[in-house]
Length: 193
Image (cartoon, rainbow, N blue to C red; front, side, top):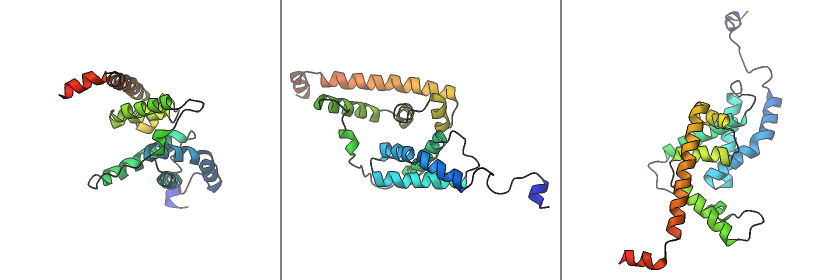
């Protein structure tokens, strides 16, 4: 009998976490993880690379992956992105031109919807990173507050409070943008003189 077995320590991956389990996880969640990355990076190649890194971590840590795996995978993706951004702090900023800023809501007539999306994106960009992330997790990724809490490594109550405050700040930023866009051109010109 080996020492690990004698003291009750499990050696190797869980019995039900084999290659078949991983293949099923990959097939079920890969597209969701890529979309998560795409909404944050604006680059499909970088998003696919992020997804690959996430699934490498999922395979290595397969005994920690919960049955409801998507929030856990998003949490891994979030930490990978944070590590990448931290490592680039000293590098010059390169901002990708994301076609997502020009998207329109299906069935819309065009300019009004594009301006609305641009306003929401600009207001969202004015918020702190934590506010942006909780709003993205709930709005874009369609997670519950409990699942978002798992991604953010906090309690559901903390996530609910963060969401409430972030929504309030987003509404304020949107109303500020609306007020600025409705100012008469003459008033703006006079203030510049």
